[in-house]
Length: 494
Ligand code: FAD
Ligand code: SF4
Image (cartoon, rainbow, N blue to C red):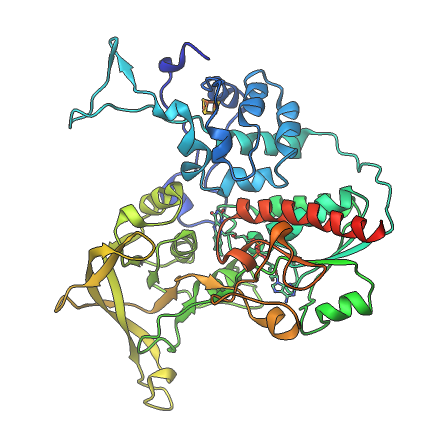
């Protein structure tokens, strides 16, 4: 264990663009550690005998192992350790919720800060704790270093003569594709959109996850021989049964995500200027609607309300600012303590000027019907919203305190755009067009051990199974499915 741990109780800060500047551009917000800072940060690791960071990671990366290599300046060696368990470290280093995973369990963050030989106390007399090792920042550094400096050569892979299909090219699908291609399978990925990458391309904005990084991962898979068929909506263009019977795929992975947005069902929600976060972000990220020459331009709203408190809501708020909005409200019905977004994104949103209206909930979208052909509010434009204040009541089934309306507390906000970010569920298309596939009451695909669905030879993972979750969980599910698909095909052969 590093005896000098207390000399440096805080993480090395992440260099980032000035909030006033970055709130108006789409360039990446955080700039990454230099090699020197990465080494210094890695030296904060205590190389614990019982490292709690590892069980905190959903795919159990050998964190002390890779961090030790970074501390010694052996960055490529560190990359090789990470890549044994993680297929997308440059992505995960940027977007994983480390504070509730590896870093949340890191013992470095459980050590009191010592000052003048005594534990430092805060104004309430409580011990001040140190910060965990910046595991995510180090993972990002290592992956970026590898992308820029490593000598790349496509490995020699002996083909095994078996064909598999992957439906959906998000993190779960990309992981399955990589694992099976390395085992010699002939892998084809079918993607409904015109670009591969799933939410990494169409959801998470450029300023948080540059698209070139995602495309570098896709190119790496192409180098392994993986074929990508874009603009292919499986269940419409070709069915799952056709993939097997007519095209000879021996096993199929469904990584179709959870792209179906939810709405509140309140009056005025169909007015012009109300978007789902998915539509708003897809237009921005995939269709580059913020550029003047975009084929699919988007409204440039001035007063925006985003409803919700997850990562998607933060991305919508910050994208609206970058589009030129003068005021962006984030309306969330619980308090800051329950806000589910990554801490870093919330801090960045506050720095950039997002106005958090916590313990508030819209009850009606106010619609201006003037100049529209009919007085029906569906034909009007957003002019505001009626909001009610909330307070936290008794815990609900999820264990979180239920938000309850405060009678008579309604007020209005002037708005010209509303973005609903209330969560998503899986699209029913595959279930509706594939006999034998079963889903639960939330529309999520039902899987058993090895992530095999209720249909023989069809496997699934990621958000399509869990509902909207995280990149690392989707990747972990892909790893399990890839192993099971290999065993399934090899077992049939035996
Ligand atoms: P997805 O990434 O959803 O990809 C599914 C793909 O399947 C899509 O490309 C879709 O077009 C395709 N598809 C669907 N149906 C068909 C069909 N019938 N035929 C062919 N293709 C089809 N997670 C984090 O860990 N950290 C974050 O900071 C974070 N931020 C997020 C921000 C936003 C805006 C969003 C929307 C999500 C965020 N997430 C974050 C969640 C994370 O991105 C997802 O959990 C993850 O991408 C799920 O991966 P997946 O492989 O299951 O599917
Ligand atoms: Fe290092 Fe923290 Fe893991 Fe301990 S728990 S090995 S300090 S990263």
